[in-house]
Each structure stands twice: as C-alpha cells, then as structure tokens.
Image 1 (cartoon, rainbow, N blue to C red):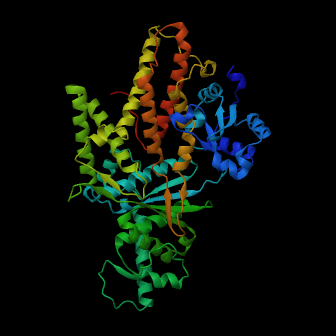
Image 2 (cartoon, rainbow, N blue to C red):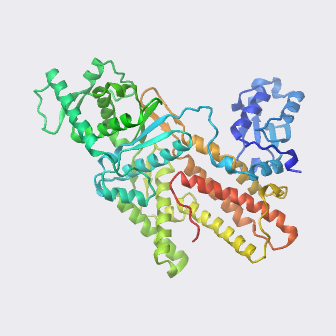
Image 3 (cartoon, rainbow, N blue to C red):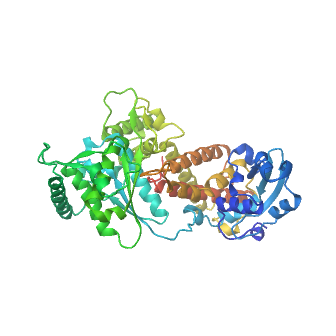
Length: 542
C-alpha cells in the first residue's frame, strides 16, 4: 500500500517548502517546518495565523486553495495526509507511512548535500594561517588548534558541496603533523620549499626596490625586515581598502611574512587555470590585523593576485577559565585524555587497559576536543573549564556522548547479526519489501523528519559563506554539523531507552522489528556521514 502512494525521487524539505509556498501564492518563508516533538504530534508544516492575515482577509484561506494544496503532485513532493486551518494557522501533515517507505527504501540521497543549481567547480585555496608559524608543538596555541579544526572541517564540507579545495600550508613541523594526525586532521605534510624560497627572494628584491624608489630607506630596520608603507602604496595602486582596519599603515615585513605570501602565490600559480579562485584565510582573532597586512602585501607585490578573491574567516578566542597560564594544545589534549581514562575506569572498572582501550580512549578524546572547540559559532569565544572533566566525558552535548551512541547502534546490529546467524531471527528483507505502517512512535517520526531528511540541509548549510558587511570578512556555519549530531544523539538516546528494538523472535513481531532496524540503519548512516566531515571515526564498541 505504501509503495503505491509513494514516488521515487528524494524529498528535500526546502523543496517542499518552496512548493507549498507556490501553491499558496506566497513566498516559501511563510511556511515553517515543525521540529518539536509536541507540535509534530499534530502537524509537520505550519503557516502562522499572523502570516495568513497578510495574504488573506481575516486570515482565512479559501477552500479551493486548500484543495489545491492537498492535490499537489510532483516527483519531489511527498503525499499530504491533511491540510486544515486551526487556531495556530494553516497546518499540513504528511502521509507518514508513505514517506517512511520513500526515504528508508533508499536513504543514500540523504547522505549528501542538497543538489546545487550552481554547476561551477570553483577553486578554494584554504589557508589555515596559524599553521604557517607552527614550527613546534609548544607554539600551537589553543586558538591555533581551533582554527586548524575548523579549516579541516571546512575543507571536507566544501569538497562535498562540489568545490575543489586545496589546503595551505604544508605543516612545517613533524611533531605538529603527528599531533594533528592524532586528531584526524588531514593536512598536507610537505611542500616544494625550493620554489617557495625562490619566490621569497624575488619578493625581497621587489620590496627593496620599492623602498629605495620611495625614498623610505632612512628608517632604521633590521637586516631581516623591510619597512613597507602599506596604505600609501595601496592608494597609489588604487586598491580598495573597504573592510580593512583603518590603521593599516607601516608594515615591518619579515622573512616569515614573505614565506607565508610565497606559499599562497605558489598555490595560485600551480592550481588556478580557468576556474574562479577564492583564497579563504582561517585566522585566529589575535592575528587578524597581521593577516590583513599580509593580504594587502600580496596584492601590492603581485598584480595578478588582485584578480583572486581573498576572504577572512575569523575564529574567536579560546579562554581557559580559572587559569593564569593556558596550556598548549598538546597539554590540553593530554589533560582531556587523562580525564576520559579516569571516567572510563570509574564506569567499566579495571578492564580498561591495553591497546584496544587506549585506542578507544584516544578516539573519545579526539571527538570530545573537537566538539568542545567547534560546537560554538566560529566568531564567538570558547570557554574551557579544564578542572571539570564531566563536561567533556559525560555531558549530552559532548563528542563522547555522540560516540557512545554510535557504539550502542553498532552493538545492536551486531546482536541482530549474531542472532540471525543462529537462526533466531530471519535474514533481513530488502528495504523495499518492508512495511513501515507500524512505525507510529513519536520518536520514530522525529528521527526521520528532523534528522535523516534534514541531513542534506545541514551539509549544505555547513558550507555556506555569508558576508555580514562589505569587505573581506565572511562567516560560516562551522558549528552546524556538531549541533546536528548532538540533537540526533539526544533524540536517538531517548528513543533507544524507551523502545525495545530487537523484539521477541515471534513471527508476528518481525515486520515492526525490521522496520525499526531499517530506521536505525538510516540513523547510523547519517551519524557516520556527519562524523566523517569532522574526521572522527565512529566508535563500534565500548
């Protein structure tokens, strides 16, 4: 029955909202997708009464328009069960069994970002600015680690959304490279230093000639620094300074500064052909002013770089509470790892030892650190309470909580497979042969409608850049995937604690059990796909 009323195309919530808006002869923004468990008991979409009054006299929608909504028929639209007016406004409820069937029969389309109308494959050079100076592990501050984690995540979600992403720079230190690798950060580890040094040498010659021609050689400067009049030179070359700090003036350019710019220039020369190119600088807030100088210096030294779009994504500070001497990134990781080990010993006893447990503790710590530094919007300050390990090891908003739920799902499927191999349960039927009409629990619709169906929207949102004001700054939704995972884990945990998924091995119960297992497989696939964008390996046992 479900198959007969169900289309085959993927159902994207944003497209449903657009179609409902068109049918109502109103913009899609008048419709709201419900997400709370309370409201989802009676409706899936709503136009509030206040919004209706703007389009219809007395807020009453004509009956023929409601009939039009109920009869909507398009490949990418789900069937509607009811559409009616109530005190809240105009409400729509979907044909839920049909939608369960349509989504769970093949949920592969829901593990990718929304299809994009933009078929261009832009090049993004992702410049993690703090890594240029990370010559030792002690030099990698917490704000630097935050920037590196965000850059790594952005590289993944931009690639998923069709961009060609090239990370810069190569990590300059072996110990920093090993530390970042422990956290799952995938960043280049080598580069052509000879070509970079050649470019640095040519930059030096260019700047010395400029200083000499400008008559600015009388100022005292060290042998390794060149004094450049940034603002004067920019005005001379008609370079726009909109969005830059107003006090950009003189810049004592060091060799490290020139090396930073040289790496960017080599990347552009090596990679850019005919596609548009954007250089996205990921910067900790304390180094924003310096990066603006480097940005402008590059444009002054290399005229062709003025055709390259440069944007700055600023990461807020990381503040350690009740501490006068903040730890380095490595010390912070080791502290969280010791707290995670202590919490695991308290929960599981003396069995917590050996290589396998060390791998589990390291994996949990990596996830916890990433959520702690990434679940806050990038422009906001992150506050770390290093004295309270419970926030990291036990909180429902922690990476460890997400990982524990991955392990619960893996254990459940292992239990089913073991029972099936012993003949206790039958083999799993094809997803298209299952009946989903037995999925009536509130938590089941919540997991499908708020998470499996919304994951493409979350992936697309995570890659969106916006400019809050004219100039060079951009913001991104770098926290979107972490928040999505936390919400999914909390709602899954509530459902898992309330519903016995693997039921008694009785034939009349198998239909519901298989439908629930298929839903759980969708949840697991979304969890794994989301964690992959953070380079976190899901936990399979605990």
